[in-house]
Length: 140
Image 1 (tube, helix red, strand yellow):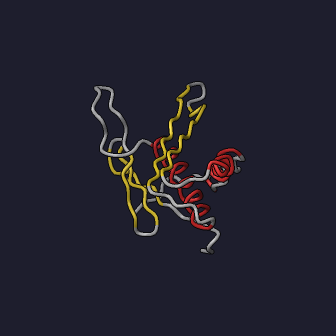
Image 2: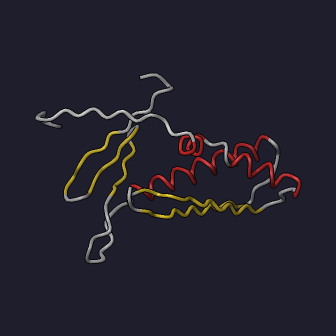
């Protein structure tokens, strides 16, 4: 596999519990149950929002480091509006809160930089998604 290719394995555990793994890291995806119980993991839509927030943060932090902009603390809140027909996230709001000696004249640039992460580009310029299905094979 080349450096330009990413690989993630998604494995069903039970019910709606799913394990996602990549490069030796694992996380659990689960649902919010009809009786109100919260599942034991992330919802897939939360992973998407989290990926956008993490990618945005990494991109902004790299820019700040390269431009010698001191960052004391940094929090990003990502909110998605759920829709049906078809089920999807129809709107995403990303709110960045940076603390440090951030020059006022850099704020608009930082907003532009925040839109430059890979996940933001992927969502706004969606790639084709191919689906291949094999049935009857035993999974390991």
